Every structure is written in C-alpha cells, then in structure tokens.
Length: 605
Image (cartoon, rainbow, N blue to C red; front, side, top):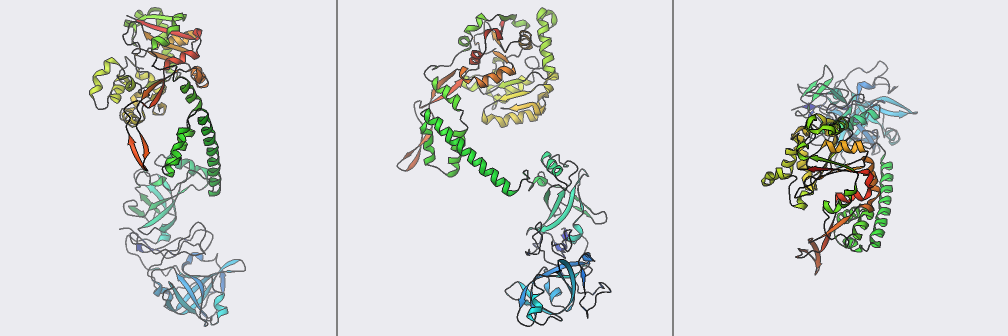
C-alpha cells in the first residue's frame, strides 16, 4: 500500500504553492476542510498527522520573551500550516481555531512555541507566540486556544484571520513506503513503459477514497500516448493543462525520492480526463451557447414555415407529446430536412410511380458521339497491350491519374437490399453467410483483377456509402484487414461501384475531357449488373447546385407508427401502404450534363 504524509495545507505561505504533506495511507479518506485564506487555484485544506512537539531554533531574532516579527519571505519554507483562527471566544482573550490536522491534541493542547502568519501593513509576516493551553470546542469542529500576552477581547480580535504555523522540522520520521505530500510536489511524472516525461506534480488532493496527484502536463512535447488533443492544449500555453492521477500502487508503482521522480502506468484515456478542449472562459462559453440556441431557434422557425408551405404540418404533431428530449430530437430532424430536395421529391410523387431502369435513362445516349465499343474479353485491368491495341494508351492514362491521387472510388453498398440481390453474380454464393455484405466487400477488395490494384490504393481516396446499421461492421472489417492497402485517413464512411471496374473508362473520360463517363454491357440480361459511371469533381459540385435536375421515384410502403387511443399510446402495424419512400436513381444525373460532355463505353460479347 502506498502512503503519503500531510503536514500542511495547500495554502502557500509565499507566492509559490505551499505543498501538502500527510502520513496517512492513501486508501484511507483524509478529512477535507475549507478555508477562505486559500488561493483560487487550491481550495482544500488537509488534516495533519501525528506530530511531535519538539522545539527547534528558528532564528536569533526570536525569543519566547519578545514577540518580534519577520517578513514571511524569510525562512517560510521552515513552516507548515496547522490551523486557521476563525473567531474570538469569551472575554479572556481566547480564540477559536479551525484545525488542519487529524491529531489536534498534539498541536493545540501541548504548550509551547507556535507562529502566526498575518498581514501587517500590506506585508505577510510571521509572528512568534506562546501557546498556554487549548481545549476542544465540542460541536463546533474547532479548538479554543489561549496565548501568552493575549488577555483581552480586543487583543484576540487582532489575531482573527491569521494562520497558525508549526516548524516543518517537527515532522515524525516516516516508515518505508510512506511519503510527505510536500515531498511529492515538484516531482517528475514519467511513463514506466516508455520512459517519456508526462509532466510535474503541482499539488495533491484527497478525494475521499484516495489521494489525487494534480499533474501539470509537459507543454513542449506531444503527449506520450500520442493524443493530439492534449498536445495542442499543452502547446497553447506556457505551462500545459492539468490532469488528475490517482496516487495508488496500481497506477504509481514506483516513487524515487532521491531522483525526484515517479513512474506511472495509467490506464488508457486517464491522461485525457478533465482536460478541457475549449480554453474559453465559462462566461464566453455560455454566451456562445446562447447564440447557438438563438440561431437554432431561427432555423427551426424557418424550417417549420417551409414545411407548412409544402402542407406537411402533420410533422409538428409530435411536439404535443413525449419528453423534452424527444421534442429536441424532433426539432433537430426538422432543421436537418433539405427543403429543396423534399419539394423536388414531392413534385415527383405522381410523375415517377416506378423505378427507372438504366435503359430508360440512357435513351438519349445513342446520340452521344464519344463512344467506345470493346470486347468483354479485353475488359480486365491486366489486359495486355497486344489485346488492347490502340486503347492501351487509355489504360496508361488512367493508371497515371490513380497514382497521382487524382481519382477517388465510391462504393455504394446500400442499394443491394432494395434490389434484392448481391453486388455481383459471382459473389452470390456468400448470401448464406451471416454478414454477406462485409464478406462480399472483402472478396471484392482482395481481387486485383476486378478492383484497383494494391500498389495504387495508398494514394486513392475510398468513399463507402452504407446503411447505418452496417457502418460498425465495415469499420471492423477495414481495421482487421489493415484497410486493404488504403491509407486509413483516406477511407471515408459515408457505400455503388462494385461492378467490374475498368481503367479504360477513366482513361476515356480523361482523353475526351468529358464530365460523365458511362459503362454498360450491351447484351447483359440485367443491364445494371455491369453498370458503372465516372464523374468529374466539377460535375459533382454542379449537381449539388442543380437538385431540380434529379429525378425521384416514390414507392408506397407500410410504415409502423404509434397512435394515441383513449389516452394510451398504441403501436400500429399497417396492413397496407401508408407512406412513401423516395429514391433518386444515379442515372438521372445525366440530365444535368450535355451530350457533348458525355462519353459511353459499351462492353460487347
């Protein structure tokens, strides 16, 4: 069991922090007392342990017969605080003192020299006094003391607010494994596993169950655990942030008093606790929160107005019922609604009653001039130059773009459930697995013949568009597979690109300076099976500004809900469709592109 000894409170005698001392085991609660004399950064007073009333020479200037005073800046390190004079008691010059020790009998009952720390003429001074006697004031958690030469109420009143001191040399010898808290302050804190310096102990506090080390993190270097948050905070100031470290054997196994350092083995995340990422003051944070609430209220009012104009007032009925948190969640959802997109979808309810196929969407592509017809036998990433012939330059251009990081791959893994099929017919055997989505993705990414080769993956961003309930499994798959050769920072979770990928299409788009490239299989039974598209960044930006060019289709579906029946909420499972789900096919983006900026690659048998 690791122990610390407490001889003085956290109230400094001089400008530097006065360090704490205790000889109690850290696992035993130490009583905490508060005092108005403490500085703002430390509001705790700690109890004292058993002390011996030995006399030590303080200075030739001091004598028990004369009460001379010296400035507190002289020899202040020779004292520790043992109590605070709070009030006058009776008419005989007695005073009441709030103890700062677990053994007040040793300090307040035994007569002898004591010292008072006072403010005199704006200066902090130390005055020697002679303790005559002392007794406990039952029920008041204080002690009644009388000093030599203090015999009237007026004399005693001048001592109120002073701090009673004892000599630091009057400390008992500690057993092995015990430490005075004051000796711990200023020690370096080092990670035992790596030997890297974490910071410095600036104070010690008692939390009830055990003592806590207040550690100031090292500001000049990054945190040993690699935390960017703590590193940036430490670099923001001259001293770095403060964190708490429990002073227990499991976390602080080694304390070297000679080298003034301690080794710690903190659990993961301990050093990040209680570190504020926002360095603004509490007033500034409250003002910012108030402004954000006002801004949110304005956005909510505007969103409600737009929904009312679209005759969607039924959404507001949810505010009549439920808890405050549920109303807040509904408000967040209303604010997040894209009103323009919703308006576009509502206008297409009657127009698009069924899902468009690629054949219907590409009726105009027959007029496209930029066309390339290629045999399916040549349609593989590893096709030789002899088979590709003049088209080999297209593949070379595509690989150059990929190696320079000019290309990003988007994998849409959410649409297969709506279509009732897997990503590719070749992968259909994996449907019997518990998680066919992740297994199919794994097979695809591991197949260099059907996907981007491994040597180009580190420089290529990958965007995954997946269902919300599949994101966690996707993250686990990538993490366990070392991200399949992709740079982890370039993998965006967000999941359709899983058909056979062709660098020829990318090279064709680059050569023709097209905005959109389309790949189709001419004689496939399922036209969408081998469908693929390439977009330029400018085209993607333009699509976000031309939402009206997108075509939506509505599917009527039953949607479970709750109804209030006779003051009770009843869960309803409708037997017929009672709602619409809106979809927008990727093919409709062709409407936003002119035919001369479109290129098509047809794969023939």
